[in-house]
Image 1 (cartoon, rainbow, N blue to C red):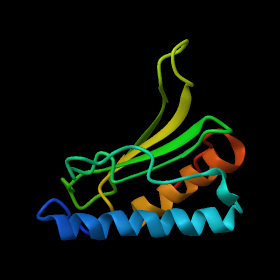
Image 2: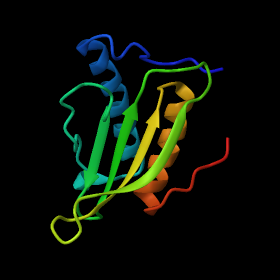
Image 3: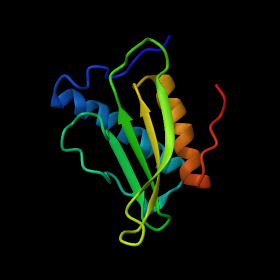
Length: 132
């Protein structure tokens, strides 16, 4: 059983902003700990609908890497997190950006796993999730 954080983020714009700030703080901690410097910038993708897709995004053009967090409302009291690697951009027309996409219902446990996934992605260029 997990305790969800900002599970009401879809109820209004101010609650959505609280969820965005949570992810920004998590990213800022990761960026400081990994000593990412100025190469990464956020936000990257637009958030016109405030629907959690994305709730957070960051990109580093020099390494052609990105992170996209999709937050959804919880559907259970269990950990809800999935991730995949994707590409953004049209080969031959745009620079292709490799992105780590994490979709979850925000909880402390999901945030911890997301942090580990992002850490591996930004420091190693690949995802090596830990078990747990």
